[in-house]
Image 1 (tube, rainbow over the protein chains, first blue to last red):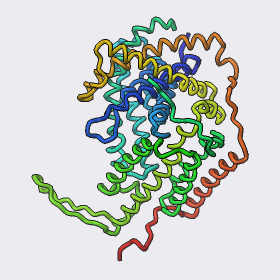
Image 2 (cartoon, rainbow over the protein chains, first blue to last red):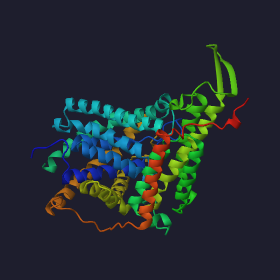
Image 3 (spheres, each protein chain N blue to C red):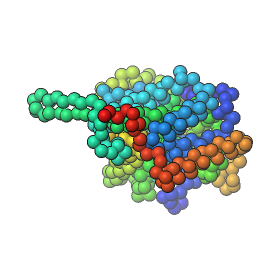
Length: 181
Length: 290
């Protein structure tokens, strides 16, 4: 069946839900991981999951996994509700999904490289938006939001995304044939 | 591993308010307060936020983790931005200002002379930032503690989002206990193979190598399980007709009043700010020296 980039059928509904729940639960479960000597900034390996879901199932699935998953992670951790950071996480996962149709073989080196590039672009777009929103909400200036919000989020998300997304793609390719779709 | 939501029934006023009205008011509040830097208006919204917060009957003990995170964010943003760097505060604080505190010292080795001056205006602006962020935090922190997770799906559906998006949200909440169980099973299986989660220390790359054996199996296992769910839903003709929901949301007169109040605040703010130019950053003349 011919796929469309922005399709949102039954399959996408289910995997968006799974992606969101996975991101939420694994974010909560790995809250104990902290960046050394960086205050209360926790490292989130689970950030790779919405990006991976975007690449495999499309940009809408990626967006919902990131947006809703971040909401759920914060709900489980008791951190409240932070709309701009939820939106940023959604965009961060949606951008890699834009190459969803172009990837056929998840083990192919070229596909992995394209995915890596989109992961970085997604993080810049998503975390950039969330960081810039602090200028409007909190009144801080551009330099401060870059130093305090954007750079820590970009660096940690980029490391987890660049390392875990290819691993997930290769693991998925091994089970892809079982889905029959 | 037990995963629970922070919400439990409290029989509070907040739970009587329709969840749609709560979301609408919270978002209107966010947009409205973000247009002010005059502390007189900020204090009004600050008081309003804490009245709203008190309606939820949530104890500080339950929310202390959230407040700790807000405090750390506030500290880093306000101290770094306003106090230490004196950054332009997004163009809000104009002019050189009136000095409150001055410091001069020389950095050793490089012999750079550092002149630092904290002005009354920047300190006052830091206070305004504090009040604004605390007010916004009070409005949103109580949401997970005072809103039944079962209502999220239907709330967003009735707010106009698509059936599929709302159902996806509903399904995600339903999946949380399942995935938490799968995570616990995978963790136990890996521990039986010598995996030590307590020793996930070291640099970032070391942590990546240690976390991967946990995240990869859980993720792929969930995807495989998801295929069964997709087949089950397709067999039941999901998506062919409008979906019904077991929960029912009903507006009461006070929900309309809350929404109307929120809209009134927003409209009044737009007029005050952009027609009469009231509400911008203001420093009380009495605190300016000289």
